[in-house]
Image (cartoon, rainbow, N blue to C red):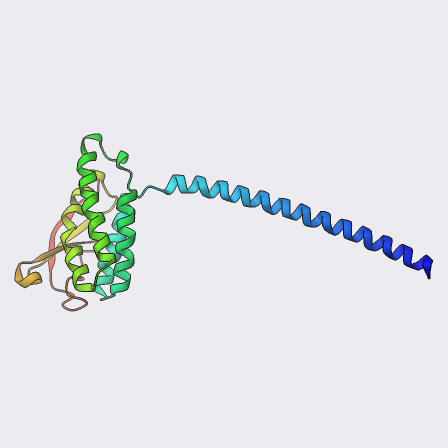
Length: 193
């Protein structure tokens, strides 16, 4: 029996040592992969920590589409994203002579985005409608790869009228909480640069 026990202990000790080496090796590989992932993620963040004009337009259009659907929560979420993008926008991508104007435009867009993020839908609509001029000015300075359409509804705000931007010539009015969706017309095309 003793002759049988000694080889079994010997076998168990060998398996234990092999198992520990495998764990240490896999932990080391895991740590190395994790470090590489963290280094890559950090580099990725550095490359993408500044917002682009295209991202800002995407968030703006997301707000528009949420308001067309009468979706206050989706508009708030997109407003929050827009405010962050306005903060993170890299002014050095603008012509030097336009950077101060760009900074002022982005401050207005950020403020409106913050209000949209924290407001009920009626107030969201007011802030959304009030910033299409800033977006047009930003697009003229920074450029944008696709045409956008400034659209106008004469019935908004007690018949004073209201404008917004769209990526389609088809009217989907965001100013009446999913009512009167076809009220409006294309006022001008903002040509791509």
